[in-house]
Every structure is written in C-alpha cells, then in structure tokens.
Length: 148
Image: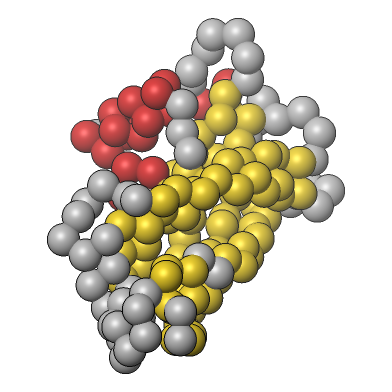
C-alpha cells in the first residue's frame, strides 16, 4: 500500500529571525532557516499507518546573532482525504548550534506521525504537511520575499 503524501508548505518552508527592536534589513537578521528536504517511508499495522519522516533543516547565522544557538518551531499537520485543512497539527521545538567560525549548520529531525485507519485501508490519499510555525510578521516577510 502507498504512503500518505508528504509536502513542505511553500510559504512556511523558511523562517528569518530578526533581533528585537525594530530594524528589518540584512544587518538585523539573527538567523535564517529552511526545511530543505525530507525522506521517509511508512509502516502499516492493523490499526493504521505510521509515516517515518526525516526532515532536513539548514540554518544560517545572521550578522545580528548573539551566541551560537538558534531556536526554531516547526509543525507536522495531517489532512484527511479530500480535505486541505489539517485534522491534527503537532508543533515541535528544535535548536541548531553553530560551530565557532561557521556560518551554516543544520539538523535532521525524525518524525513519526501515525494515522489511525481501519484494517486493510490505504493511506495514500491522506496528506502530511511540514512547515515552520511562523508569526504573522514572519509569514508576511516570507510572502514579500517570494514576490521579489
């Protein structure tokens, strides 16, 4: 049986974090991160399907960053067949540590959302969405960047 479709939400695939206090140009960026890719498979059992997903996060240190760690929040949402709105959504916190003198770093997040299904049901029409949990300002920034 086929696995549910996994996708990274375009508007929520990146996050740019700025220092507190107003400025929003390149010198005010503390860090940027992107959900760059994913891989995985699924396991069917008598009570549903577990989708094993590895999400690859790439982060970049900004000129305004203090310290060597950046924190991010992302989500996994599950939508039923024929629906775009998720029925469940789980948020996760993660951090990326930058080695001294390095501008980039990354992490691999291992997720395993479970979709309850009747025995012998196929999960191929279910959808799993991945993205950063953004503030309204971060979402507006992403959308403005996409228009350029």
